[in-house]
Image (cartoon, rainbow, N blue to C red; front, side, top):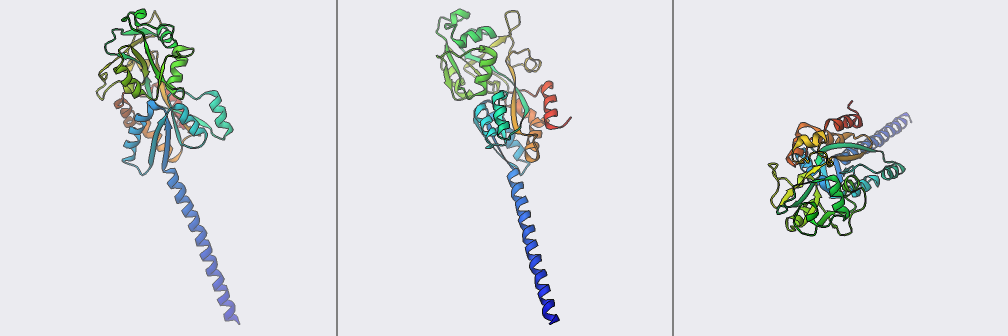
Length: 311
């Protein structure tokens, strides 16, 4: 009788061991799956940033098991994807609107901003156009449709052709808010991306458009053929300066200097933090320079330290 009782006890212990092992295995499997999920980063947004971040991701993945997917679609698209929990990082060449932040928080998303590089937003014309410099005020009048012929600003007798971005673009919003301070002309051709604007203006002697500086210089930092990059003055009493000189962007002397942003849900952790640290490292900032952009300026370095918890 005792033997039967002992056998029953042993059987019960074995069953418990198997069950607990199974539970442990399930927990281990769940942890492994979670780690796998964290090792895959989805990034979406700004067309201005897409090539830069793709280059950064490719360089980072060479020495890491973390996989990264980078797509464009515009800053508004990337921000919407973050709000709807579809991506890990939103690229944005503008800051989030108050309405977007409110919407994010209503969806239990806490947007945290990181600046990964600086852009000298460039105003470009066809290389045949002799106009070399304009003030911000004149640019506003041109893109609002108040100045319609190049002769009004010292150029040839040609009707001005306007090229800009679509409304989901952060560059569209930035240029509207900082230069036009009003509505774009209904005559402006709305293009899908920076590269399209560059190609259009190469083929239009009357054209003018705005693009990220990384799209108008080659790997050596020289202007791409077929276009001219205008010098821009803050006002009539200020010198017109070029976005091609890093010091103009770094000091803010170039009036269209702007930060290139990324947004995450809360302070980045794990794989996301690893990648962002790489972007801000010396190697990452060198890649920004290779892509035609500029390193993060000191004021935004302080913002990054705060938002990354590295103070």
